[in-house]
Image (cartoon, rainbow, N blue to C red; front, side):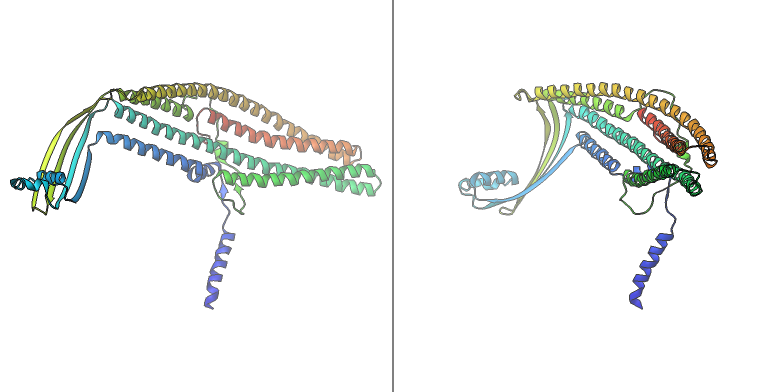
Length: 440
């Protein structure tokens, strides 16, 4: 009986999973899930962490450097023996001058400590701190750009899935209407009121609609898989359920202003321009002197003579790079060229985003107009189809005319589905182009 308990537990777990309600996705929850687990967002956060670590390294220039070292040496070398004698202050050793030539084995344990503080470095640390800070802020703007782009992709994937499924619904409605017309035509054919050619034409149209419905269902399945991929989730056999009424989609409003200065890509390039300017200053610091203050202490212990001593020293050091073969001049030229490159990238980005905003606004206006036209066309096509079916049942309408009416109804229904989704997509794209969040 005990051996069946794991199987029973596994079966109960599977049954509970099967009975658990499927997750219903809204646009806000889908965006939040993608921003939490998508690899692009995670990688961008790691890049920010790397930039902050670099800033921490640069900040170390304002902290004292503490260096500890030590060694233990045994030697029979005359010079080493003399040095150890001085370190240990074993001046009695000098009473026998011959021992300088033949010191025998001497030893020394030396412990050293040094504190160095930079007083002046030509402005390089300050410039490097400015550059590192700008680089960190640029990485944060990169993350914001990735988040906005990912949110727009999630909304687009969700709308594409909704569009594909609503297309299936429209085709199913058309299929039911055509199936009813074919059933009516068969009865009339058996009664001798419809020609065989007309019945076959209706059946061919019905088969075409079934083929289109099969393709639409396949496209909806692919759209569901694409939606899962956009979320950064692993493929799953569970169906993707969308909320029938999504307040997040309905709340999307098109912006009225055309100001795109808050676009994260632009802000990131502006920060990189500041970083490049600071790196020019840091490169020029190579021609300036550096001044350091230091304090050093040393402790020596020798067991050969049983002596020990301490020492302490301090002072200032000044270094001036008189000639380095043109290395500093090359760094300055390189940093100036990189600064000019970033400035041109920023100018190009402003021009490109300006065009993108204009295209997005025109696309939104077109989508709104298409939605209005297709909505009116659906009402007209539905009324026309109802009249045509009634006339066909009365025998006053040819099958070819009924086929044309049903085809136009299916087309305009699909057109309205596409126009509805495209209008929401156009709003998302316009908000994205202006640097606003694609979600409300």
